Length: 284
Ligand SMILES: CC/C=C\C=C\CC(=O)SCCNC(=O)CCNC(=O)[C@H](O)C(C)(C)COP(=O)(O)OP(=O)(O)OC[C@H]1O[C@@H](n2cnc3c(N)ncnc32)[C@H](O)[C@@H]1OP(=O)(O)O
Image 1: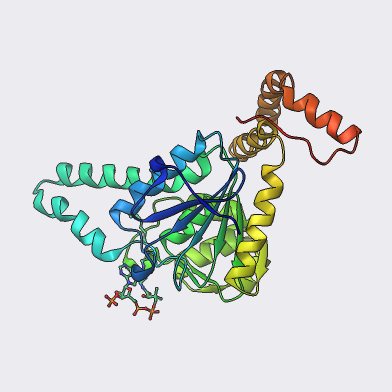
Image 2: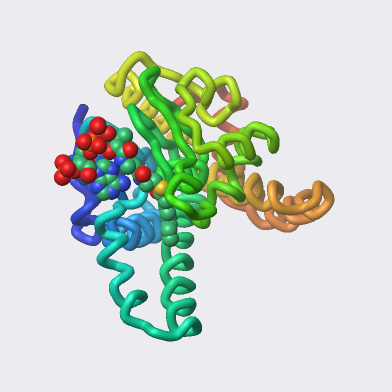
């Protein structure tokens, strides 16, 4: 694979960003010695990374995977203890609450940055995906995993209600309130097979290598399409999830009043009519 390094503004301590294919960016969770547990810096860097990729014209699709033996062990418990130092030092409930409010908001923004990113985000999960890992992947557009993957909405086991996305997104992603609530109340581990059957992941691979190949194949296919069409599709799928059918339809009219005037519409239409597989689209 001919991978190139991403530019300077996409250099991070906890993430490795590369460009394995034209218009395809690969973000790797990169704290393998800490089992990719999310430290305070990692929460911040995830937000910065996806905000940057959202407006990066050379990026049309993002693939997320993880280095090392597991996808992620969730919240870095040691780092969280240090981050909570100022909380421990505040001696008033209002001051303590303000510290927690700002922290939770920042961590929510970090997880939501995958969903807010204009480009489709594809995730590949191998081995364990625990706690905050489920928040992260449910904010993505497409999820694949290896057959040794397992998942756990672990938060109740550490005495808290999940607060950065899982409770809001998991029921919608799997389409079963009953199963989502069971997984969230019990914190039981569930397998790749169950994740596939309930729709949390859409493909299961024998190993990490074949999963990455599969992710890149899908990413390349998406990257070959009109970025106007793909980004418009992502924006409107998410809008429609959170609104009535009629509100979604009304937004589509406004959206396509403008976007069907784009050069991409004519280029794609002519490409389809002439069976030309090599049509190119300008950067967006
Ligand atoms: C505002 C709040 C926002 C978000 C909140 C999110 C909540 C969560 O994410 S809840 C989930 C928290 N995570 C966990 O409870 C996982 C704990 N870890 C494990 O269960 C296991 O380590 C394992 C991931 C299943 C892997 O097991 P194993 O292969 O046996 O390795 P270990 O020997 O247990 O661990 C190796 C090494 O990693 C350290 N480590 C593991 N998990 C974490 C973690 N979450 N945070 C920090 N460090 C972690 C572990 O301590 C070991 O370190 P050594 O220095 O080698 O001892």
